[in-house]
Structures are given as C-alpha cells and as structure tokens.
Image 1 (cartoon, rainbow, N blue to C red):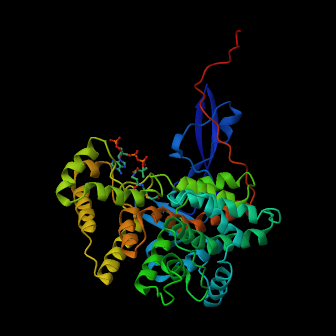
Image 2 (image 1 turned 180 degrees about the vertical axis):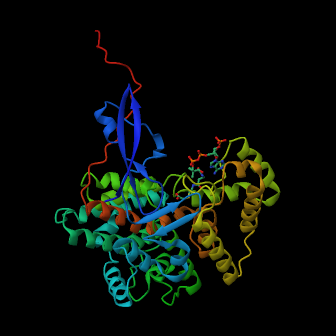
Length: 424
Ligand code: CMC
C-alpha cells in the first residue's frame, strides 16, 4: 500500500471543510484520496482521466515532462539494449530480471505453449479475406476464452500464471496466422527451436514451398526490440480497459480481446499504421509545407506526434530512431519515406506551432518505418503492437488480481432531462 504522507488537502464545500488524505508513491506526484467527497454528496469530475490515478501499481513509471519510462525501475533504453523481450516480459510479470536459469526456464515454458488448439484455426474461416487484421485479432483472441473457461479460476495464482504464459506464447501464432489468412497462404506452425522474434517472423514469412526459409538475424533483433519498446506503458487506454474488464472477474482472454479493441484506435495503437498512411498521402518532400499548413488549420493531425503523457520527448522514440537507422543501414535500404519522415520531424521540431504545444515524435513515428523495412504490411502494424503489449496487459491484470480490488465503476455528471412522465 502507498505511504500516507500525513499531509492533507482541505476541500471547502458548502461551508464544510473536508480533509482529504495525501499519499506518496516511490516516484511521481503525490495523490489526493478523494473518496470522502462521496460522503459529502459530490462526485469528482475528470473526463479523460487527465488528473486521476485509477489504481496503485508497481510495474511501470512514466515522467512525461522528463521523458522517463521505467519498468520495475529499469530505464526503457537499458532494457531495449541490454535485455531481450522475454527477459522484459519476465521482469514485468515477476518484478525482477531473470537469472540465467530463470531465463531458460521461462523461455522453455513460453516455447511449450506456442501452439493453439487446432479448432481455433477454424475461426479464421468465418472472416472475410479483406477483414482488418485487428478485427480478426479481437475475434480470435476473444475466442481463446472459449477454450480456457470452465476450468479457469482467476482467484487461483497458478491458473493466473499459466494464463500469462499461454497468452505471451500464443499471441504471435495468432498474429502471424491473421496475416497468412488475409494473403491466402497456409498457416505456418510455431517452431520451438527458434527464439521468440525468429519464431514470429518464421510464421509470418515462411511457406511450405520454401523449406529452407531462414530468418534474417538483423530483422529478428529489430523485431525483438520493437516488442520490448512496446511491452508496457502504465495505465494507457488499452491497459485501463483490460483492468476495467478484469475488475468484473471476466475471463482473462476476453479481457485481452477488450484491450486489443481499445488499442486499435488511431489515437492509440493505430497510430503506427496511420503514420505510413499519412506519409503515402503526402507523397514527397515538396508537399510537406502544404501538409503542415493543413495540420495548423487542424484539418489533419500529424500522426506519430504528440502524447497524452510525454510533453518533452518520448524515450521509446529515441531508441526506435536509432534502431530504424541500424536496420535501414544493415539492409541497405534508402527509403524515400524515411527522407519524408525526417523532413516532417525537422519542421515540426523547429516550428513554433509544434513547440508551443509540446508535440514531439512518439514511438510510432519510427516503428512504422522499421516494420515496413522488415516486410510487415501496414495493416499488421497495430497487430504487432498488440502482440508486444499483451505482456503489459496481463501483468496489470495479474497485479490487480493479486490484491484486493473493486469493480471499476465510474460515475457521471448527468446533463440529460430531469425525471418526467410519459403523458399519453
Ligand atoms: N498533430 C497536430 N496537432 C496535435 C497533435 C498532432 N498529432 N496532437 C495534439 N495536437 C494539438 C491539439 O490540436 C491541441 O492543440 P490546441 O491546443 O491548439 O487545441 C494540442 O496539440 C493539445 O492536444 P490534445 O488533443 O489536448 O492532446 P492529448 O493529450 O489529448 O492527445 C494524443 C494526445 C496522442 C491523442 C494526440 O497527440 C494525437 O492524437 N496524436 C496523434 C496520434 C498518435 O501518434 N498517437 C500515438 C501515441 S503513442 C502510442 C501509444 O502510446 O498509444
């Protein structure tokens, strides 16, 4: 439980003074406990949760002004360069980085759960071939709840742990099959001799006709880093959705499907796809000034820029930009879209309009360019984000279920009609 500071905020309400306790976390602003305003007949009002801490958590810390992102205390740039994705998963789930033995054991567990029940594969056939991959993911991940429900007790710690492993292990299989389905190729089964990122790329790009298909290690490393950089991000919209759905005691696979739905929007995970669509629409560097005028007239948004929390820089974007440079250099790609992206970045960082509004490139500005270089089609970008974020969602779900929690039930400021009668 958080530390009570002994400090109190005093709220004057209708001549009455209400003392509200203040708590301190390890880092970040103190929080005012507003529960007592209810007894005084009031609700608090904070649409968009701009100033509301909805829960207590030990997983991730963000300081948006300083551009700091820590998972269990470790800075994201160190995790991205000194640890791999599965180590980061272990850290998010368990609170510490694994020892070499714990790492081996965890990797083996994940590898042993990469297959999905064969009947899951039949769900894909119900979708149109041109369905958006995120629509398919919402459906097939939600469908896992039908395979793990009757015997699953969310109050049992062992059941919760195996659920987390299953989700981390199976989500790449479902993501790759979603892609295969849309392009009409047969599903490629997981290969447990490959590491997490290699296995995913193999399921994405191998075909039964090409038995010697080898995953490029540069691309596997870049993929692993993209996964790491997207692994968790505190109480964002999709994580809050998973917590809210989970607070009812709902099936965790269904909760993750709810998270996938929330992630899909262009203001959240859909932004990486929207960046490439925007670059396509702009076309070439000469069209950038005209596009920027449209942004300033608020006719369009500069996708991949701005963040609800980061108002200085996005620490993930720094590592992502470096990875982007490395991947393009290693592959010898001279992508004209990169030149276009760099021009947008240059103008935005020097133009008063963007400076005044603290608009900086976020993680998705660069991730799209790397994903494109890896060969991932644009429509799959948000699926990759969902794959990587699954560990964050399930870590928060586990944390919530590991201590006392209440069903999430916000109230409202009602502005509809007063009570009235039907007169007929
Ligand atoms: N392009 C142009 N103007 C913008 C943008 C943008 N991308 N983002 C914010 N603004 C302007 C906005 O119009 C407003 O201007 P004014 O003060 O004149 O009314 C000002 O900046 C403040 O914006 P806001 O809407 O109050 O900011 P917010 O914190 O509610 O929104 C955001 C954050 C991420 C939804 C928004 O910046 C956005 O839509 N960005 C583009 C989408 C994007 O890249 N999202 C990915 C976020 S990173 C991945 C993830 O974690 O999900």
